[in-house]
Image (cartoon, rainbow, N blue to C red):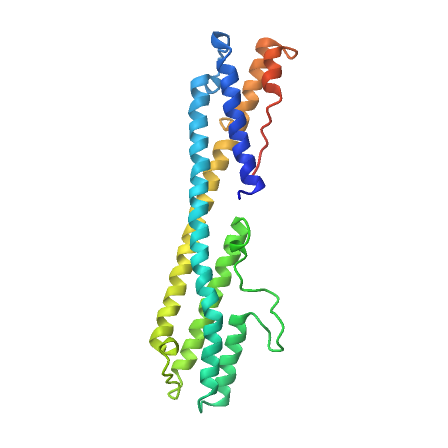
Length: 248
């Protein structure tokens, strides 16, 4: 389901399309001297704005897919970390090494030494909510940190000769592959976040940025129709109620 904000952008475009249709119905009378307000120019802008909305939807879907793949890595990492620590505890490794691994394990789990949750969870907030530039950035930092913790855990386990589990999922080559997959998933989500941000900027420029944007041209059309037919005219009343709300 689209967010209220995304729906608002689409409503602006829909109202702009309705405005064009009404103005085209005025026939030759609608002949503004400003070339940006002429029907052909308005239709070109409408096509561009539709394309911008479509690109945001495409990039948003790609981002959410990449976030989902990254979240799967995160969901796998927590139980894997638990298994690794338990496997290490079952060896004759030094107590300090075990404690160091437990410390990293708590960071991966997002818990404190006393068992409570850390102030900042490593969960992917962008996976549950409509992604914003802030949530995208925060989520990436969170996963970068998780990858760093996991890398540190692998390094500690690799330093212990007695850590030689028979289970393939716990062996060092598998762990290194898992770490590589986490890095790739995080990079893919980050790249998708950039694509989504760029698409939103292009949309905002088309709809709101300057004097040639959709909202500004809609205001110009209203002013022209008001001057052409009068503020009390039926023609002006046709378009005066069309709302164009500037959004980010």
